[in-house]
Image 1 (tube, one colour):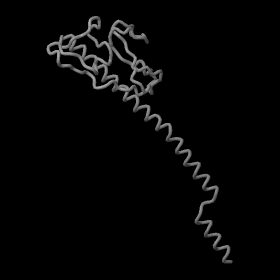
Image 2 (image 1 turned 30 degrees about the vertical axis):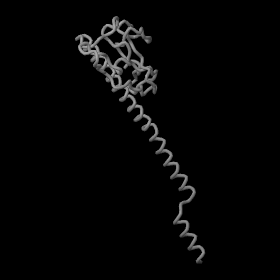
Image 3 (image 1 turned 90 degrees about the vertical axis):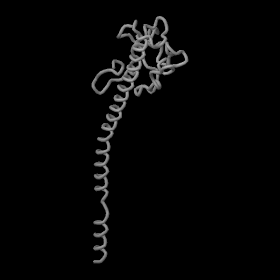
Image 4 (image 1 turned 180 degrees about the vertical axis):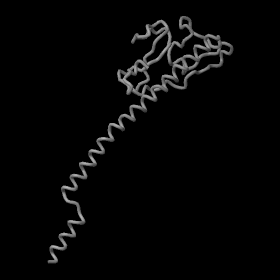
Length: 159
């Protein structure tokens, strides 16, 4: 009699194999539902960074162009007052009034979060707006070289 009573207590304390399988299955379903949500959050973060970096570089290009138009900085002939390369924005340009002073427009060239590289696509004023190749005369605009599609359905390269 005593023997049957202790068996019942052991069974009540532990989980049966079936309960364990069910609990594990529920946990796996919940975990698999969390993975796409996490991936979406990572992609959204990268898209946010891409927009910020493009805005930052385009703003630097515009500030350079404004300074060139006001004859505050020395510009290279044939560049239409735009920087020759993105590096020019980081390295800085001599002031027209004080040759020993340089003005910088960008702290660094950011890494494209979509490609993981700093080799941004560039367009010069002379290039066709839809062109994928850069003429090399100046940097009028920048874009991502990623061939990926954004959450909103647009192409990163078109941002």
